[in-house]
Length: 86
Picture 1 (cartoon, rainbow, N blue to C red):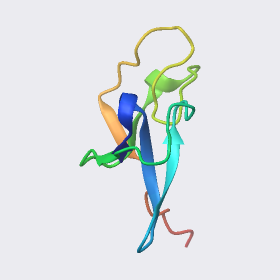
Picture 2: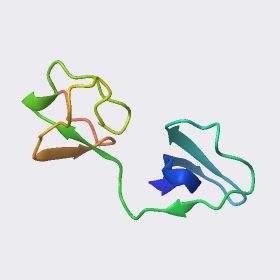
Picture 3: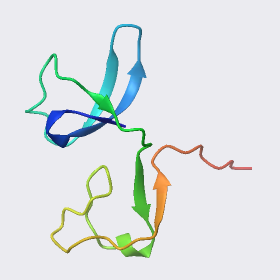
Picture 4: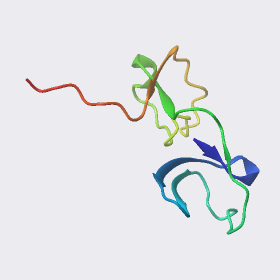
């Protein structure tokens, strides 16, 4: 995960020799060419479990429904290898 000025976070998707493609988790209007972007050292994960039933969350698992914080002890990475079918 990376962080832009103003605390906006994103996930690096494409690592090229001269550029990096990033998916932005938040309002991108404050991001401009030449901004310094820092890696967070974290891998994107979200809360999981029954506590999420009936809740509305953003791409990082943060509640956006006005019902307060999600009290979940379990978290999972957003990119995992899918289990086999057979």
